[in-house]
Length: 204
View 1 (cartoon, one colour):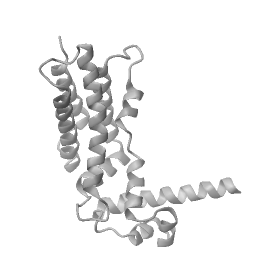
View 2 (cartoon, rainbow, N blue to C red):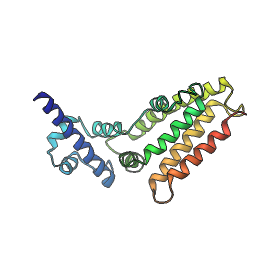
View 3 (cartoon, one colour):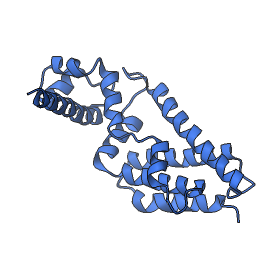
View 4 (tube, rainbow, N blue to C red):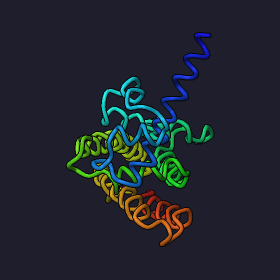
């Protein structure tokens, strides 16, 4: 029975997060109440407070379902036959980010993060974006510095500048495509942009 109870509690939590995705996407974060989320899930507001302290706590839990730290992505995509090629690992990880973005849940949550999450809301959006950016920045700089040490990063680009360029391109691509996904095929355009970028950085 305890196992069943735990499973039921987890199912309730997931249903609330599913409902939050729907309402946040439709109304925006600041105009969504916990009561509306509970109603969308067919539950009471008490059920929401049983699992989440507040809207911000619920929002972060929703984000965690699709978030994959860049460092973990790098570990997952690193080619075992080419373990010491940081530029190739970064390229493959960036391609994987674009691939994951096209999955329905990831697309919904990132649309909320980029386009439905007003600054004046219950969620500290600016701090959240800053935290996510810093996590990516530190990891990218580390890899570009490794590439510089191995002589594979072109000498004309510093690791910090390469990182800023890659982050600007990736965030801009995500923001632009999520604004109007029908305007172009990110599955085609994204890899072409990424491969062109890394092709210019390799020292020959």
